[in-house]
Length: 140
Image (cartoon, rainbow, N blue to C red):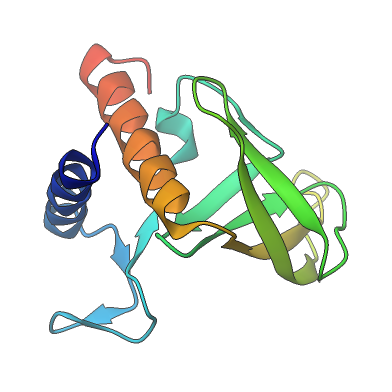
């Protein structure tokens, strides 16, 4: 996909996420962060994303997700979406969040920054495409 096509796809994805109320932390069109964060709906994903247990949000610059394993800040992880080349991300935070019941286990919340924002943009667009495909076929 060309850079222009990717930019068009990203803008379309961002508009759709805004219409669905999936853009996080945005007030009156102004995002507090460098790039808008878009909620990931894991139940709508027809494929697994490794090493995610439960994705929280994704932006051009990074991703937040829950993991069963702690990852030390400063380490690099590969975000692997089955049909894409893995995207490298640097862990900038890892916090243990206690489960509030025996059925909700404690998990680590990881915050990562992509090494290459263009690959981050491509990953974000692909995740939202997969969610939409799954939703339209009733798989989610």
